[in-house]
Image: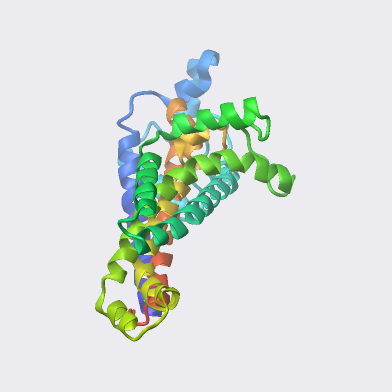
Length: 314
């Protein structure tokens, strides 16, 4: 197990290196001068030249990349062109909001998908199965920006039950933290839940058609025991895989939902960085997103051995 973890961590580092190269190259293909945009109406040629030299933008691209990489290995991702703050501090400031929304949306998705997917598979071909399948199809098809706006109109502006936008930290007020989280988490969670429902149904249905389930039924075991002891343990691996992918997607930032609800997450930060041509912030945000996604994949791989004793890592 230790050897497997070490190899995977090395793969994570190599993947991050590849991501950094691709992002750095793509960023410099985007038209626009970050220093010129940062100065705005205060443009002065002398100040401009000094800032370009301080940022190292007058050097060849290859030299710029290796300079950035050597600093990044020490935890220094550079300084924001727009605000002048360290990129690491800017990204870490947005991280709690991103994690809050991701796990809040995942909680909503699991509450919906696990029971609905299991019941839909167990009662395959019934009216309940058709309703669940149709509902999941609608959930996947509805645009998140439209759903978010409708929730704001109904629950915030019409009923005044919940705030329409913004973010409050848990330390500041746990109750307001929950109230501000509900609408964006439900908006994203219903879509993720619809996707997961279909995968849960498929995984459970496949397990129900296996020979060991027919043997258990032939022995006269109760259906609830068959589902709990034989079906679910064998269906968990594909389900956990999809859950990991969904969580990685959510941690990457749901840009449209974050913009609609003025949620200060990494996705919105990356969007603002693109608009401001703030290349250092954009590269730092993408690197953090890639790191979180890769670590989730590692955790999912380790969960395989826990869920299925037949899986061995050496």
